[in-house]
Length: 72
Image (cartoon, rainbow, N blue to C red; front, side):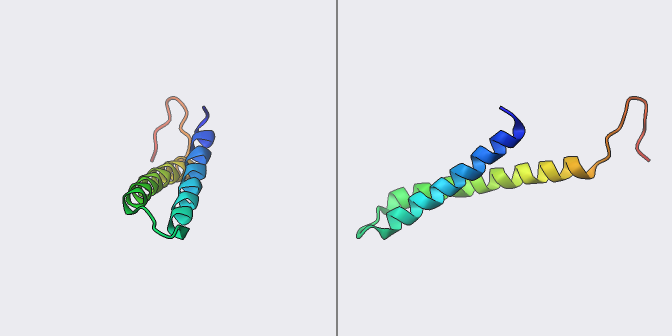
């Protein structure tokens, strides 16, 4: 699995959790334990997505060094 694919899968799962939470909230008597678990999963995914974004940002920002070159 490529890195971009992994990142995309995380985004899709996050959206899926949003939909699950919204659907549960629309029920006449939402299951509070289920909502708590879904929200926790969504938050963990958000943290992981932000980690990937920081990694992508760092990789793009740093120049590529070739063998024998030193960063000044």
